[in-house]
Image (cartoon, rainbow, N blue to C red):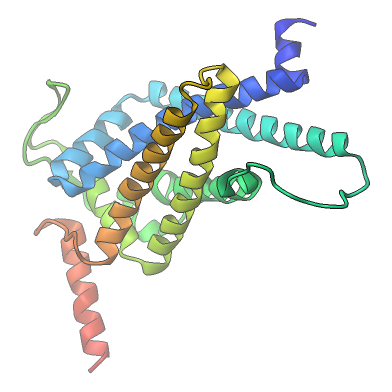
Amino acid sequence: MNPAGLLFRSSIGRKFLMAATGLILVGFVTGHLVGNLQIFAHPDKINGYAHFLQSLGPALWAVRLGLLACVVLHVWAAVALALENRAARGPEPYGVSTWLDATFASRYMKHTGLVVLAFIVYHLAHFTVGAAQAGSFKSNLPDYSMGGDFHLLGFPLVAKGQTVHDVYSMVFLGFANPVVSLFYIVAVGLLSLHLLHGVDSMFQTFGWRNHRWSCWLRKLVLVYSLAYFLGNVAIPGAILGGVAQPVAGTTAAKKMAVAVTSTSVSQR
């Protein structure tokens, strides 16, 4: 069997494929979180960062298509392995159903995976395509004028005074909706559970985990998953709870002030 056939047709190959695509996706969601946390800085930061990404043009779409391919392959490998395991058990149910040395995260990988997939679709519709909450989508908001230069790793990428999409206001207005924020918090919690078992399994598949390092690796994965959860929850949580307020003069500040005034008047 050729290497491609071994990768797609054997259990070991599918596990390796799922681990490899999982590693790429873990790197992406980590970098994505770091970029999103710029919402707590001046609007120049996240707006300049978003403009820089958009300016990549075809390269950005190549990355997006590559990530989409990773998601498809990851889901396919997971489904194929699940069906293979079910076929190996046979049609007769077990007389006693128990989990031996199985964590909560590992027991519900299928379920968390499905919710995460739905979350990805909604997230793209919300912040990338603008199909959800179209009124607060970046292209439907007034452009933002950069108050200063945006630098990344010391390189100037967006100049002061340049007009860019107002991603800062889009994020604030999006998470000001309690239903949207709560959905994100629940979905990120399930994604963190998925990462908790998935990253640990990835180390096992690649042969990076042995008896000496097993305990430390699991603790490291636990810390990473918890930090990922808290970092993601901080954004909708702070906006919904009023801890983070949009900078005065931004579109988000103006629209949220109008919404508060309208609510106060209607309650009188």
